[in-house]
Image (cartoon, rainbow, N blue to C red; front, side, top):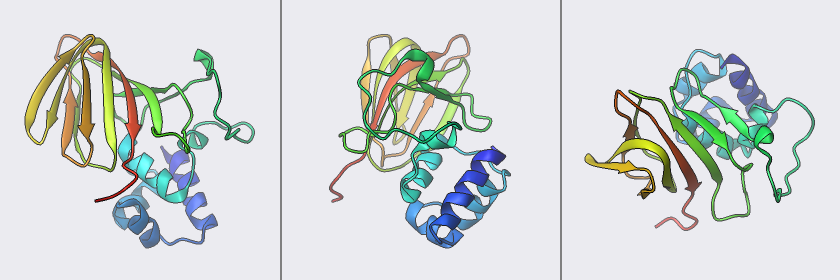
Length: 186
C-alpha cells in the first residue's frame, strides 16, 4: 500500500497540486489522502478510482511497473495480461478484463471475486455498477433494501445511491462487473 501511496503523491506533486486540491477534485478528505500517501490507510477500489480519475492517472499504471502504457484499446487481453488487484486488507479481489477505456461508455470491465463471509460496506460514487453473477450468491443492499442474486442473475445500481455487497458464511461469489460514469450531471 505504501508504494501506491508514493505513486499517488508523485502524480499529485507533478501536477503541482496540494492535498487540498486533490481532495477537492476527488471528493475525499485531505487527511485521508495524506494517510494514503504515507501508506497508513487502506484504500477501497472506489476511492482509488476517484483519485486516479482526478489525477488523470490510469489505475493500472499503479500496478504495472515495466514500460509505458499503450493507451490504444486492445482487441484482445490475454488472461495472463489482465491486471489483478486487491486493495489493502479488503477481502475482495478484482481482475480487470480490459484497461481503462477512456473513450468508451464504460470505464472498467472486471471480475470481482467476493470470498465467503465477506462484507463490502456501503459506498456512494458517480456512475453506475452493472453486474452478472458467474458463480455463487451475493446480497446487495441499495439504500437499505436487500436483494440476493445468484448464478445468471444481473443487477444495475445507480452508484450515487448507498450500496453494499456481502456473501454468506459458506461460499463467495464471482461477478462480472462493468463500471460507468454518468456523462451529464443533473
